[in-house]
Length: 246
Image (tube, rainbow, N blue to C red; front, side, top):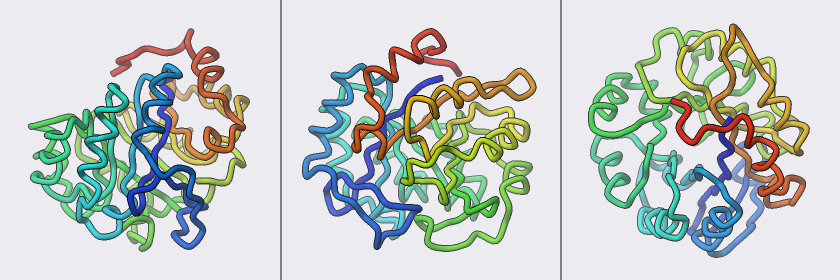
């Protein structure tokens, strides 16, 4: 299982939200590129970057900063936020993003994922409250449940599932949701939301449904609050980790 340190961008800074609430923001760093370099130095195999501004507006206002993060890290970067067109995905590839995550646009126009996938790696991003998929940077209900979306989902290199109710809480991941999702899709699954300590990562790495396991886990606030040490976590996961599991 790969570990993806998370860098969430808002107003050019590195932040974390609590349960997706933009009014409950904690600023952790003024220089996200510096954070990316530190994660790379600790041995991270990938980074997960989310542009919260773009997720709300659809405008890639932090594109130059995303490029700086890619350059500073020297690692594959998975990016989500505002990827609502083939052109937006292409612009991100131009600054070095290795894989884009399409969320809102994939629900509104599933063919977009197929179009992007023909040109570059793409993941399907599903953010849920309970089992209902949210859109527009978690600000609106999509009116569809996760099982329904997965049943009709276009082919993608991976699926990233975030339980909004656990995100940023350090209270542990929604294991039931992840088990359901493993059973519902054949795509590599990346878990997001709730990791608070090494025990949570052990539980995620051990989760098995129908012989399938998680491809990765995204960790954010736990790294910034130092309840998870990145080097220690990577060492713990090393026996189970492949740099390219899919």
